[in-house]
Length: 303
Image (tube, rainbow, N blue to C red; front, top):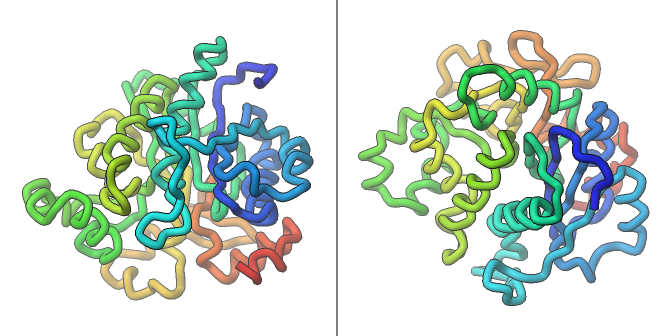
C-alpha cells in the first residue's frame, strides 16, 4: 500500500507488455515531476519479466496483479481471436482497486488513467487537473478530444455503430459530435470510480462491442456539462499520424488544431506544451525522439 495520500493518483494497465514498452510511460511520468502514487494493474502476473519488480521499484510504481474477472472467474484473455481483453477489463479493475484502497483507508482527491504503451508525459499532469477541477465550475472530468467528428473518422464511426446500432447513431446525431479518447481520462475521485464501473458495465458481457472507446463516448452524451474538454493531452492518431493525413482534409481549418513538434516535444497549435502525448508511436519523428531518449529503440523496432 502507498505510504502517502497525495491529491492525484495515476492508473495504468499492462497485459504481457515487455518492460521496454512501459519505460517511456513510467519514466516520463516521474520525469515530469508527478509525485503522486502510480498504480499499475498487471494482467497475467505470472508472465512478467524477471526484472519487472526492479522496474516498478525504480519508478515507485504500486502493482495490482489480477487474474480474475468481475465474477471472480479466471480471465479468458483470447476472445474472438484477440490476444487480450484488458482494454475493457481494466476499467473494472480500476474500479475494484480504488474501491479496495478506500476500504483500507486510502482515498485520493483526483484520478488520472491513461494507456501505457503509447503515452508519454511532458509536464506534470496533476497541475492541469488541479487548475481545472478546483475551480468552481462544477466539472467532474477532464477529457481529451481527437479533434474530429464521427462522420469524418471511419474507425470511430464504425466502432460506435457496431456497439450501439445505426438508429442510436442517427437519433443521437452522432455524426456531428466530437470524438473523445478513452485512453486519457482525469476527474474527481468519486466521479471517476463511478465512470469506470459504468464503462465496464457496458462492455463486460460482450466481445469487442460495445468497446471501451464507444461506451465512453456514449456515456459522455449524458454527462454534458460535467466535463472540460482540454488540450492537456494530444491524440496523435487523428492529428499527427502520417498514414491518416487524409483525415485532416476533412477538418475545416486543420492548421488551427495541428500539433507541432519543437525541440523534441509536442505543442498545441497555439504553442502550449501538452502535458500528455498519446499514440506517439504512430508518428515516426516522435518514435525516434522518444525511443532514443528512453533507450528502448530495439523494443519498439521489434514490436
